[in-house]
Image (cartoon, rainbow, N blue to C red; front, side, top):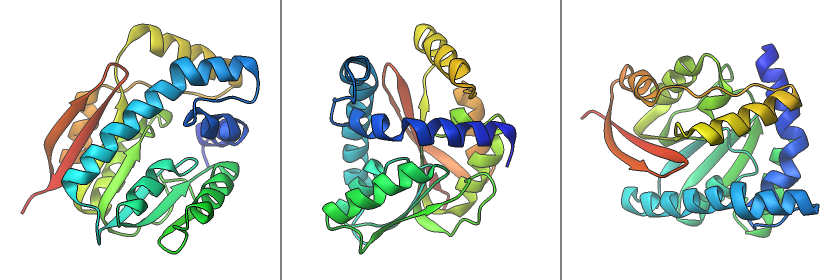
Length: 220
């Protein structure tokens, strides 16, 4: 495990409860509630709406999905609720504990499962759809992670990547530096090129102010 990976694991383990609360626009204290309601949570809500619409177009019923860097499981559960069989992988144990509890509450634990692992090195099973939602910016060697995800995809690879908005990048860099972790804002073209090197073609790009969603598909 690299130093970056160890730091990211600690950061997201500590963040897990607030990360999960952001989806509900709440927080464990006034500052967290403010950040989650007006910044992090709004971005998460927009991203979830766009992913739900995308999953509807791709058709999740009967699909297998591999959600790499699944966090507290919201995207995995969304795909599962739409009929997919999902495996989520994340490096942070507390994130996974929340994800498993959420799957049980939603009665989706029969087809949405979670495992601990570093997506840069752990074994990956093939799946119809592979997801990298808010993941590549935590890896210096992002291209290797994207290539691994692309190689595991039988049909589609979906990457949600932070867009290059200066003030948001600056704020996140400061916050991560204070926590001792690292965040990287890789050029979108280089992220796409890494996926395309594994035989995928860019089928769709969905742009938001704070992020873009890149949808790749396997050549016939």
